[in-house]
Length: 374
Image 1: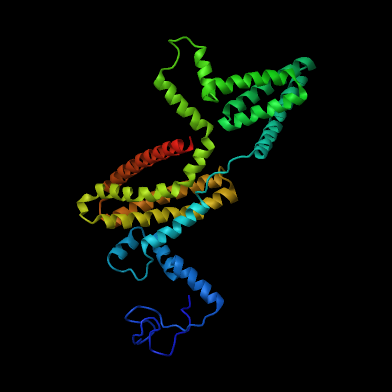
Image 2: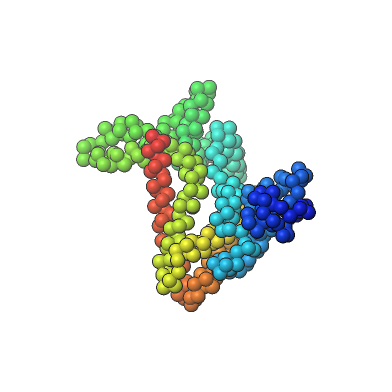
């Protein structure tokens, strides 16, 4: 990136000191002309704010291809060629959470209606196939109709059971609205059956749960502690969409707060190296950036090009997993100078500790969101 046009004068415009070449030895300001083009101003501003200049690519290439080397160089004092780890981490993590870890889309009523229509079309195809097969065997039309109707109801019931709490609510509302118009006995029977499934298995509200408890004998009723736990579970179920969305929104904070803890886990496993905690932290920051960068490249391709559950996406996911394990192994081996099996054993314990910490912090976040939401 061009630095702009340098001044012929040798006085620093910032501090007034004498400037020998292009930079002031006293304050470090470049001795540039004041007038610059609009695009030069914009590009320099962006590059300065994000540190997104040639240093980014000078850091990116060895970071991805030479595990542990960037950390070793940085700690050895070879820093001019690399971006500061924290500055690069902030930029990469912002891009990561914008591109990869955005909250999942919550289906609206119109979306749900489209899904219901699609499912109904699929069920109709199954019913038609069964009906045609029965006709070929010579079964009467009445028996064939009853058989296909029974199959339809079984398919719909199975699909309803698999639905989430909110989706079941929407399906019940749709059926009730449909029944008001059609006044069909079959829909009424279906509604009654769905309501039983929804209330007994999902306990749609705490009042519904208490109502069901009253119908049981004293020995069969839940204790006060079980009722308290149930109330919390029902409330979380009712607000699951809000809780999940808030949880996904706070993922960046979770990753950021867990990073110093991950560095501590690494330090515990490699304590015999006798190096400072800050060195472990810089190593961890570089490792997290590699994971973010690989995800930024692969996740949009898997999601928007091949589809999340396609064979190609599964292959890419396997390749990424193998690469990340290879990278972690090589980085730890090079940086900490340990033997192969010793490094593998320590990777195993680091991953277990991190997984436990991740789950515990997630549970803490869910509880915090729950109490705020209620």
